[in-house]
Length: 178
Image (cartoon, one colour):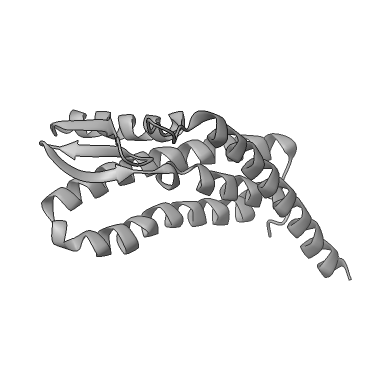
């Protein structure tokens, strides 16, 4: 019976945390995006695109991040060529919410749970910006490989990072560690 109790507690903590964070994020999106006459992505999505631009500029690429005028996205233009777009789903917040919900559900001490959630979220965010930068360069150089790059390689990078963080959390810091 204790085994089932732990599963139920995990699920309750996970779904409560997940739905609270999703509700907060959706409220933020409702207030920060504009779809009427002028499109404007959320500030987080714009920030991700602008940071991607800065990363690529550091590596010598001439990059511009420009709000798309016909859809809710930011265009990434490399060397004058429209290569990629950053949409709300690219900003890593939905994945960070999933990550944090899992950490809370498999909680350790309050301090460890909080710190791992914060630093793990920052790592996911940074890996995501680097992933978008790398994806943009690869699409620019290999436009015929966009399907493989966007749909397979680059999700594996971000989801692999989250998975490794989860494994580290469960095995080293959670109350469920061996």
